[in-house]
Length: 458
Image (cartoon, rainbow, N blue to C red):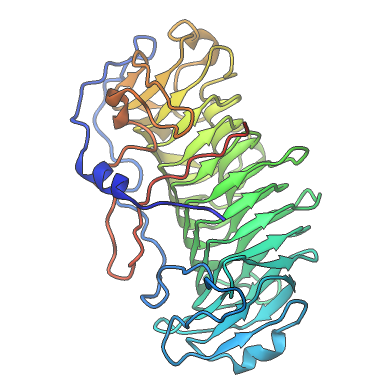
């Protein structure tokens, strides 16, 4: 499972901000003189609701074979033994109740209409600290139109389809409005996917208000998380660990008529071809082919040795903020030839470092995309091959509203990915902006933990 430590480091990061310092524009890419313009989301995308009861996972009981206390006093706990199907107990499960899974191998299930309430969600969790394992047969657990459900501390093994599917559709019909799922998936692991080009670890279809929190995915084919026609989704502290001989095409893929998507504190490891794909491709750039993603924020993520950090395909209002990119091979960010709408994109306070010769292009894009579609705030791009290599890499694409600093060596710590150079702490995943760290009245879980550091093989 993932171990995230919310220690004094978080407080220190909030309270001891590096003082503002001037950044010098890169001489090879001068700042364009133009009137200021508003781009990108002005506020953080609000996280989905998390109930006060059971806001923090307990991770199973200390004593093997002992039932944990219920999150909500008076709730019933239904124990499902390994190998048992449990669709038949759903009609007996009431809001606030818990379905408990002891350590062992459990069966895949299609779960219809499991619904709690805002005050009393339904919990599905492991009994023991050793997580229960779901042996996936095609898909793992498929939730059709759930509402107010929390799944925690479960391991999903060998999926050929998706390990977890949260589906708000009525059959194959896409609803006019996404289904209000109010669903939380947290502290779970997906491992050892089987070969299938369309296989994803977690798949969302036509739902709203979903939180994917501190999930670890070890090996996948298409996407670790695929979000389609869904809104108000938070992906937080997702750890993606690629495996050899698997495609790992995309880390997080957002498609269709999705919007209000927040990706924060996630770790994208080596061998992922594209860290985040934002939008559905439009053949020949025909914007009528697919709707644009509406409002998305990628914040405080670490990309270690991926192909392309972010592929900007079809989006209106995207913020890429405080990302750390180490030795990307294809591009920092890119706009592919089949991009549709690209509008109001902001790249700010990002830090990228690469060894000479590692990066093919900086920000490839079709000539038809107007430069003002992307705005560059202050960023730090560093490599020993700069500034000479700009002629090969191409200058950062976009209207420069802030300086693009290229002369400051961040001195990246290869274990934590934190800059050793204090002046560089204004940039990248380890910086904290004044707009962050806020909690909403319905969000008792801290919405701005330290970012997850990618795992490197020895």
